[in-house]
Each structure stands twice: as C-alpha cells, then as structure tokens.
Amino acid sequence: MEKFLIKKPKSTTVEQPSGSVDVNQNENYKRKFRAEWLQSFDWLQNKDGSAFCVACEKAIDNHNAHLKVHEKTATHIRNCESRKKQHTLEMFYDPEQEKQHITVRNAEFALVMFCITHNLPFLIMEYLPALLVECCPDSSIAKLIKCGRTKSTQIAEIIGKKANDRVFETLRNTKFSLIADETTDISTTKSLVLVARFVDSARVVQDRFLALLEVTKSDAVSIFQLIKQFFNTNNIPLKNIIGLATDGANVMAGDAGGVKALLNKETNFFFMTCTCHSLHLCTSYASRHLPKSIDFLCRNIYNYFSHSSKRINDLKEFQEYCSVEPHKILGVSQTRWLSLEGVVARLIEQWDSLKLYFISCFYEVNGIRPAQLAEEMCANTKCYFLFLTYILPIINNLNKDFQSESSRLPYLYSNMKSIYLLIINNFVKHDVCIKETNIDFRSESNQKPLRDIFVGTKAEIFMTKHLSEDDIIEVKRNILSFYVELLNQINNRFDFNREDIKMLQIITPAKVLSQEDLQILPLILTFSELVDCDPDQITSQWNLLRLSDVNLSADMDIDTFWSKLCRG
Image 1 (tube, helix red, strand yellow):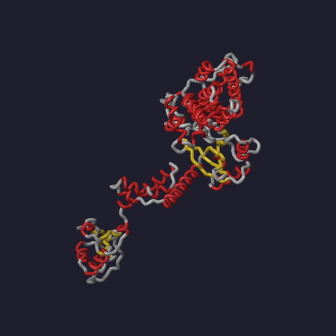
Image 2 (cartoon, one colour; image 1 turned 60 degrees about the vertical axis):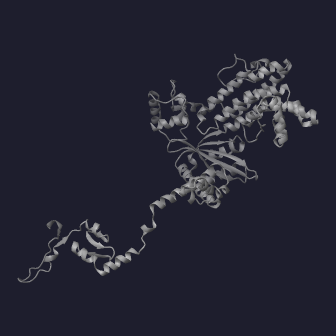
C-alpha cells in the first residue's frame, strides 16, 4: 500500500500532553488518483490529481470504495439522469456532415468559376444544378448544390475581392511591370485597363488583371492621376513599378507630357510600346500602297454573302464545280489584327468559284454589285492577294510570338532584326545586304531591278503565266512601295539602337548555354536602378553557371529554363 500513499511534509506541532489524541495524525497521507478509475466511472474526471464528479460537480476522496458509494447515492443518480438530457456542443457538430458541407461549397465555387472563365451568364446557374442532379442521380453532393443566379453573383464578388487582395498583397512586396491601355465599350464609356506582370514565389511569370477604371478625361495628366490614385488607395508603392507597356499614342508614350514622362518622375522603369499593336500599324500603313481593290474585295465579298442564305447555297454549286471545299467567306475585323491573313487565304482558295458565281449572277439578273466584284477579280488583283499570302504570315507569326503568355522580350531584338533583314533581302541588291539594320534601302541604286524583286513563289509563278511584262513591272512597283513603307514604319516604331533591348539577348537559354564570351556586368549596370542587387554576387553566379555542366536544353522556354535553374 505504500506506493499509493503521498507523504505530506511534516508540520510543526506543539508537543501535547501525554494521553491526548493528535488530530493531524490521519491527515499526513493522501491517496493518488488512479487512471483505471476513469474506465469504471464515466462520470469521473481527474482534476489536479483529485477525483471529481462532473455530474454533481464536487470532489471525492481518492478511494475506490468512496467512488462506489458516491455512485449509488440518490443525488448522484438524479444528477446523472439530468445530465443525459442536456445538449452539448458535440451533439451539434458532425464531422462527416461538416466534410460534406465543405465539398458542396467547393462544388458551388467551381461552377461559378466555370461561368466566369468561359464568360457565361449567371442565369445558367438557375438550371445547371438541376441538370447535374439529373445527370448524376446517385450523387449526394449534386443534390445538395443550391446555387442560383443571386448566390452566384455574390460568390463571384467574394472570389474577385479575395483574388484582388492576394494580388495587391503580392505587389506591395514585389517588383512588377504595368500594362496599361484605353478602350471604349459599346456604350461609349471609355475605360483604362491595368494588368500587372510579376514573378511569383514559385519563380513563374504571372499576368494578373488589376482594374478597369472609368476615364472621364483622356489627357495624360488625368490618366496618370487615375493610375496614381489607384495604387495609393491599395497601398502599392509606385517604386515597385519597374516596367511599363502601352500603345504608341502620344498621350501614353509621349516623352514630354505623356503618362510615361509623368510616371518617370515618380520611379525609374523600363518602357516598351506594344509590339503587336506596332506591327499591325506597320502593315496597315504599308497596305495603303497597294491597289484599293484589295480592301474593296475583302469587305464587299463578305458583305454580299453575310446576310443571305440563298446566295450561300447558290455558291455551293460553283464550289462543287470547281472542286473546292464549301467554306464560308470570312470578314475583316477592325479589332482582330491577324484576321486579314485568314480573309486573304480564304478568297484565294475560293477565287475561281467566286468569280464564276459573280459572272453568272451578272448574266442572269444583270446585277450591278456582282458585275463590280467580278470586274475587280482580275489577274493583277489576284497577284496582290498571292503576295499577301506570302508577306502576311511573316508579320503575323512574329505578332503571334509576342502574344504568347511566356516572356518574349529577350527575343524581341533578334526576331525583329531577322524579319527586317528578310524583307530587305527581297528587294535590295545582295552586294549591299549586310547583317545590320543601317542599310539605305530607300536608295534606288541599292535596290534590285523591278523584275528581280521577290514577291513570293506563288505570286511569281502566277505572274509568269498570266501577266504581260508591263503588268508584272506595275505589280512589282507597287509591292516595292509596300516593302519600303513597311520598313519605314518598323524604323519609326522600333529603335534598333536601344542597347538595353540588345543586351537582354544574353539571358536567353541559347546564349547562356553557348560558348561565346558573354559578360553579365553590362546588363546589370544597365538595369541597376530598377532592381536592388549585388553586382559581384550576380557576376560570380553567372561565371559559375557558364563553367558548370548544366543539364538543360537551349530550346527550352525561357521561363522554364530560369525556373529550373533557380530551383537548382
């Protein structure tokens, strides 16, 4: 029994007369609480080493016999019966039900995100949950989804706010580039779109929508104040902006009073106009040197068939006769920069069937419009269309490349230079052509004879078979004007002498893995004001990288390449 006894410290007592009884003699020892008692008495609790009845809320001596006696008392039995009728928090919490609730909530969020991602109206949510129950009758989750149009709208607002808060929190502590552009919707409301590009914690380049701000005044000062107010309201330092991309309008890109100049007073940043927009404008200006019949045919042939099912069905007979696919005629879009290439290719494909159809309509109903269209579809015009099937893919492929979501800026100089020299090679003498962009292509002494200008293989073959020598010279003279204007516009919109863009080539995978003697220090010094860095540390890491055997390919995407290098 000694092991169940706890000895108390001896208290100082006054010596009592012989024959008297010591009242503290039986209080010197106290029994320990035994854990096995918890299994025998469900109402028992260990409270600081003492037995405690949770039903009666009273302490009991640490003795098995006392516990058994207490269990049989009327008061204890009555308290236990009363306790069984009480509601506890555990009775209201069902882990399985809570897990199912979370699953249903995630399913509703997923459906709302599906509507947002695919630009679907929230009205569809009035019917989609019922459709899911019909398709999945054995799913308990589908039966519990209750998400109509109103709830979907509220969920979308919550998701949008949470997403914005996460992006804003990232931008407060991260350097980023800002993409800004103005747009006008069908209600003639002018808005300013802001998009941020940054590298997240996983070393992945992210593009995130920031805001669509309504613009009341379109001058540079008003737009700048609108941008500044937005970042100040969300506690995002303007100093974190290290890049700015806009269109080429003076309001945005002006060096004197544009948004670029005003923002440059607040922070240093790398500026670049939109390459895709610039290439589209270059092609548009160059196309003005070609005959107007090209634009006339592209627009009017589409308009002739766009609202008449009878004409489309009649055209199918001629398509079958000419053994071509019954494809629809495409129209030119003002906002889709790459649409002209598809329109031209489709008209070339359907050229013979269209011309026969218009001639037939002219003879049968004496139609004026079919006669005009058939007259414009002459051999000379077809040569220009064949030329466009050669030159437009060259421009559009570069345009598509820079519409990619991956980082393409380090490739800008080399790709633009390649296209520039390719076009020059089509009409400049070979002894003048060098691998530099400072060629005087406007001088007639440096240009090839008109007959030797290259306009595409298909156009060359067609001209040789169907055009006279004078017509060939006339067509190529117009195409030469197209080439010259195209290069003039590229020179006006892209500065081949910008050293910062040139030096960015060094960080492409092909350059990093090459055996060339490339130094990173000039690039660091060029962008030293944009990013806080230790030049010595970066130079050392660059040299170690060049000396090490890296198991990576030169053809890798630049974002993937550097992400894998950073992860080591």
